[in-house]
Image (cartoon, rainbow, N blue to C red):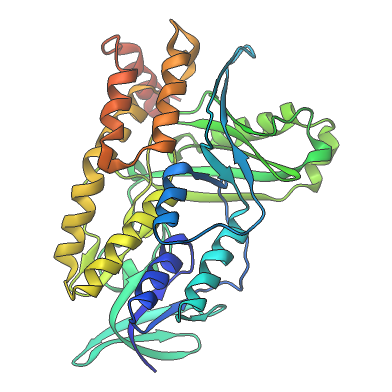
Length: 388
């Protein structure tokens, strides 16, 4: 069957792109290798800036969610710092429900959706792209890879073969039922700072569960696993309940450098393009924003050069500052030193509520970098990467 566009991957970037294209009258198909709804490793925090983006497209999240208006930082010795907002800073959702919601909205707008269908390869022909899948061939003028960190579209099109270790992070998380949790802050997201390079731990309160996780650079994967187990144990009433939990893991490709993300009429979105904030770990906003940009590019009948130009004008400077801060703060153990916690709270608020177009990371940078460079940071990275 012939389509204007075929999208591989029904995560936030793929489904949101399909929704926008379908609303413009463009014939679009979404294909995903999994049967929906499906589990996805994610903290489930939809920040205010992501919610505002959805509202611009008249989308109201009608799935189970919990509103957040507080941020709490937890130190190594259980010291705490809290900031509260009069307006919501975001919501907590289950990713499988959020992704299903966006896929449903895309279908309601006119997109076709085939799940449990694996993409195999693509061939450029005179009439467009021949897209080969486990359930037959499809044809399209545009092929869009929204298929995550290890994008098969990126490999099949020779846009990218693999990520280097320096470009990847990893995150582990679990949904912990309320009855297992020692204490729950109903409307507050908690962040802690384990001994993990460029890492952070979180406890996000959903409705009837806690999303608990730890993320950081792949170079520190062993410490991430240990920190994740410790964080679970700390927040659970009974360690025996750990065996009842299902853990999820995901690799995260961090933004911060210019990469090829398109080739003529093949495009990469979201995680497939490496659009993940290295400092905060946020990917959903960038998934939605890159999808918004691409739908406009296709509607204007432009090619990959225009898409790359617009994405990097919007994201690249922000990603570079984010990557620098991720390296600069090492394992963030000194957040509670010299009053830094108040600046961190302010910085996280800005990340959750402001957009890249507002130069939010320049503000975050100015907020956090006040004491000059410390050689302890460089030594920490060298020690961990070479000596450990």
